[in-house]
Length: 509
Image 1 (tube, rainbow, N blue to C red):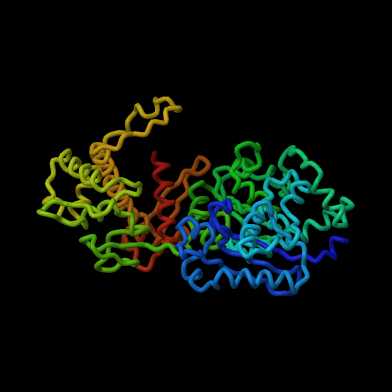
Image 2 (cartoon, rainbow, N blue to C red):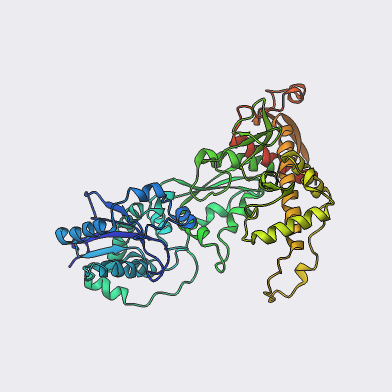
């Protein structure tokens, strides 16, 4: 039977783990090759167990969606009915080796034999395109022209990607003279070719002729979608570093490079200007492979003078900030809000991220107060705890210099004692104080003027209300006289000031 005439359907699963022995199907989607709507369903836990934070983060599924999902038996019945009525007997799956055991286990629970044969696009791609940097579904779909998207976490988007991959592989198979199902089966029984070197779609001359100057670069997909924005002190060195070597490469980076067909660059006079342009362009373009510096749902937080109330905008009452999280002063607020018993501070929950028994936390905190010669009465408010944090920061002892000299093969766990917990309190409070000082320092950059070294000369850059201005739009006197206020400003302005502050500190160092 000719491959173009096969009774195909496309299928994808999202699961809660790697094996059906310890995990289950979370989501299933299926659909025909053309012109018919796909079906996609979440599969609730038979025990009603909630999703773990890790699964929610990886898949994008939330509990509200799960609550609206049909019962597992209903979805299973719909799937069986589709296979019976559609007459489609070949399921095209990307990386079928993973999905098949889950499907067999799922169908066996309903006393149903595995009712179709599978065709794995991953195994085909391994043999047809052995030198691609990545053959994962996201990388391969991007190679064939599907814009990369965070939606590819979901089953419905993945069967659409698998459909595009199949359509992209068909002409490559035909070029090899593989046109029938029997010829495809014989091809899949052949050995997987050994990789020689990664083959990239971006022409080498395009990256090798880049200027040796600061700037930003944009990695583009086959359809022109911007996949990634980065900054560089030297565009030539930075961009070409992506394409050197094979061993130990970041899989996510290889997945992106599989999809890169073109490149755009913008030269800047100085690395600082490149960094400032990068943060603005990431927010404007929202490239799928950038993680940091995106706006998304980020907010700023401003506290009142007592550090009790906060607002997402600076107001007359809320002027301490900006912070990017309610957790920015985590330890300060945990200590200040801890309940008191007979004038003693008593923790009802662990203030640290790592698990520590509450009794040990309490002993460690008592030891911390003892080492600081403090009584609980001196920590009556968040402001007093913050003052303690500033003291800790000024007197912070250096990290143990002997730690790095220990045998790297020594896997002995460090014993958790009241003394080690006391040091954790000290360092966490010092970290909170450092965050507070950084937030205070940012205001002076909002309306400022700087002279930056540039090709043996200096270049002047100015900022007004957190935004860079043209040289002829603001005088030095106006710059220095502007009120240092965050009113009306947001995450974009905050990130820009963080980049400016970091760049200025590097230059002054």
